[in-house]
Image (cartoon, rainbow, N blue to C red; front, side, top):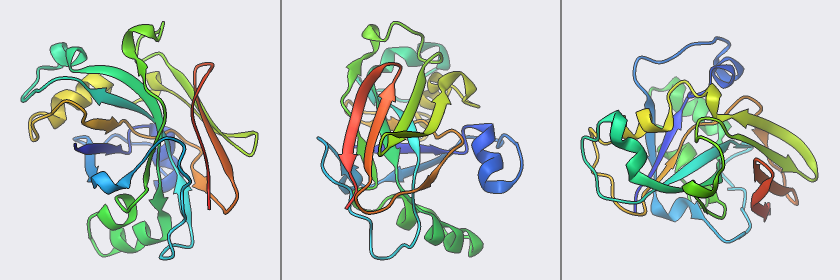
Length: 206
C-alpha cells in the first residue's frame, strides 16, 4: 500500500505558510511510509524530535482498482470511498529541511503521521466530491474548516497526475491537501474530524 499526499493545494493555506496566494506549476506530491498510518482511533504520540507538531485536516480517497497513466476524465472510476485524515507535520523540522533544500519525508512521513478515519462509500456522499465541507474539532472547538471546491487541483486531476509516475493499486490512499487553519497539537488534546454532518475521525494526542 502506498500513501500519497499533496502539498499546497489550497490557496489560503499557501498564504498562511508562505505569505502569498499562488498555484504551483505542477501538483506538489510526497509520500508517507506505510508505518505512518494511524487507524481505528489509536492515539497519536507527539514525536520527541519536534517542538511544533501541526495538524493538517484533509479529505482522503481510497484507490479501488489498478491504474497507470489514467486520463482525468476516467479518474473517478479509480476510487470508491472517502474519509478524513490528518497529515501530521513536524513544522519546525520542515522549516529546517526546506531551508537546506532537503525533502519532506522526515517531517511528514514519520510513524503515526497519517491518521485516518472511517471510510464511507463514494456513492453515499449525496454530494459531488468537489462539493464537500469538512472540519476538525479539538477539545470541542472547531479549529479548521475546508471545502473541497477550494482545491487548486481536483481529486480527479490529482489521480491522473500521480498515475503518470506511479502505478496506483487497490488500497492506496491519497491525502488531497489541507485548507487554511493548521496549528499545533498538544498532549491530552481530543480530535474529531467531520465530513458534512458525519463524524469519521476521533482520537487522542499523547
